[in-house]
Length: 410
Image (tube, rainbow, N blue to C red; front, side):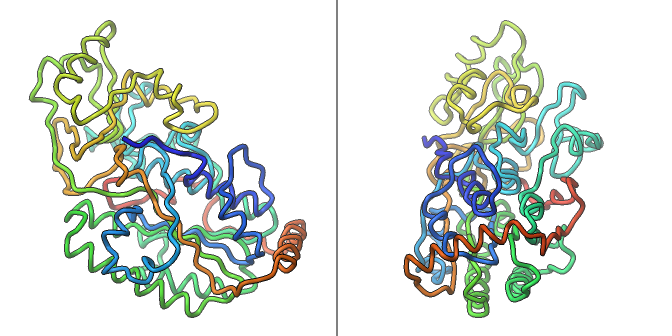
């Protein structure tokens, strides 16, 4: 079992970016990234490859020789180790405990419904549409690229085809990065997200031929892209979580356990939240330990927040509601499923090292500089933030759903 280390996680990456652009943040930044940014880059990109965990990258060394040959720093992801939680942190610089974006499907007591926020519909009842005010009011956040834009710099994003119409394949994203990095009117920060590797891992398995072929495509295009980037550009390549092949355990096989549910399980198959009938919590804990104790660690509601599993700081108004009475976190290869699972072959959200560790690779063509040059660049960068030369954001402000049309299972 591996607990999250938020001081060395996606949260620390975003804190470093905020710090670089003069944006206040209460969270610790990443020293190694701070030192790199001090070189004074004019174009900064976070390239988040969904599912490319630290250990997944190691297993794909043959298919990804270029990225594997570079200096790869091992970081922790947030918890749960899943796309909903981690990419939201990447997008706004807040931990899951603050955003409320925790798992693939979340139960809202007000509506008595379990919604998939990324798809705007019910999880157990696909005919139920997610109320518009959930994403635009209850769950809204301030995107990092907009935060950067308010400093006077350029702020933007590049998504897969479901959001960025110019993108049809991975190479298209790389071409857009090259174009932006070579455009002096776009000096600032761009968030880039790619989902296909994760989708293939879910569908075919972590070490499938389909995954290996796409991993090679990613590696080849990143290497080619780097040949065309100017020295003033930094690519922070990272991931939201790792990925592993799994097997399913069916909760409905134990009627004595299921009879204690107040509502059906929520969040994730490897980070399952259980809302239990009043007075039945102790009985549930005993039965869960009996049936699944070898494969999951069961945290009480209080322990989740005392141990800061969802991150540091005060919980959002809905975080307590989403967690329920218990959170069951996978420590082996198993998932728990309930009622209607059509199980994928690959999954994540648990507490194994494979899921919890992510890479950070800093890609740059900048030549090594002296200490005086680095200091001068840093001062120049801070000074430039006071101007209002490039204040452009692509996309509608606060339109969270615009960034959430995804075609994978978390």
